[in-house]
Length: 334
Length: 213
Image (cartoon, rainbow over all chains, first blue to last red; front, side, top):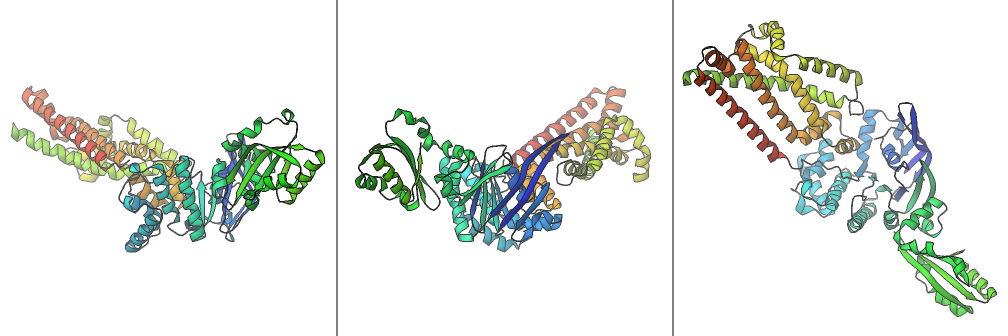
């Protein structure tokens, strides 16, 4: 759906050249929710703004639905942008217009018939659950409501792609969840491909299918969210996962403090639900002491982590580890 | 005294009304161009922007009385004479236009960059961004700016009175000052004060009323 090839974006400030995006390649599939995570300054915001050319790429190609965006003249680009919705961290609602007029904005730009606009906007407001706010002004809405208005506005033209530039970063965790589930519903029911920029692992965990990790203008890892949580390939990915409060305890465990073998077990999908630990204890003559653990619920499945201590006969412990590996559990001896 | 003051008041109102209209017609588009042609804005034209900025600065640095005299020939060309209430509208409009341009410029610059970016992302054309986003979003501030403009023009029109423009300023100088008719002087000044007060009040109220932010 979206192909990014050898993308470069440089900013020149006097003599200084800052490369915000370096030789970046990425393929995003039709209908997927693709997350791009990185710390601030990693270039993720520049990257997403290159996708609809709010930022002009210095070099490289961006192909959306077979159309090379980087090749379009201004007028064609303007029309093509109607197929790419976008939401922002600070919502960017028109403060002097009602909720209705905000949602109708893109339809008005396309000079749609007034009656049709009315029908479409009512339908959209109902979809995002704000029928009763039709005549309110943005200043009277909460952050979550504002983002719902912005989402309704972004999808009014039935775009193929929805870009979210830190769309939930200004919201509290509860509201973030409700906005994410709205986005997920939009993806499911309308088949819109969603690209989201975020610095919050919670967001990725909640709705993304795949994720790219960005650092210093480059993508250092592209992974499914499941695999990222089970077996992150890069240090940066590790850091992001650890940044989620749930796994802080892992850092404290020092293997030398224990007599037995310490291992980190990761369970994905169904294995997260099976009573594997008790099976292992029954099957082999060993003891398992659970030191820490957590389960992360993802978009399609869940990933569980356990840090455990194996005590008992060395051979039995090794057999147990082999058995666990056979059961699709990722075992990492610490 | 009323037969002195009322015709003068009407002259002042006439001068201020038309000067405001013409200065807005001249200054408003200039202000818009100043904003959109700026570097990094939606219709980037740095050269044009620079030239307009210089012209506006030069016009604004002219003392009004000098400008009025310089413009006499233009007034003659447009209205057929260089003295009188109608003739004064020409220099008043030209003096106020660069002021209006700056006022509009600063109002439009207050508009959140985010909504302009949003409009671009939705495929809005430049005229659409100006008419559907920039101006409506800046409207409360524009109204305050226009209020300020009208008050400024009232001030200028009083000065114009001194060199044959008519109106309350003229009355205050000719009767109040030269003939030492203090009551006429006081009446003229009081009327001007009331005009300024009520226009400011009306402008503030209107701006607050339409502002939904």
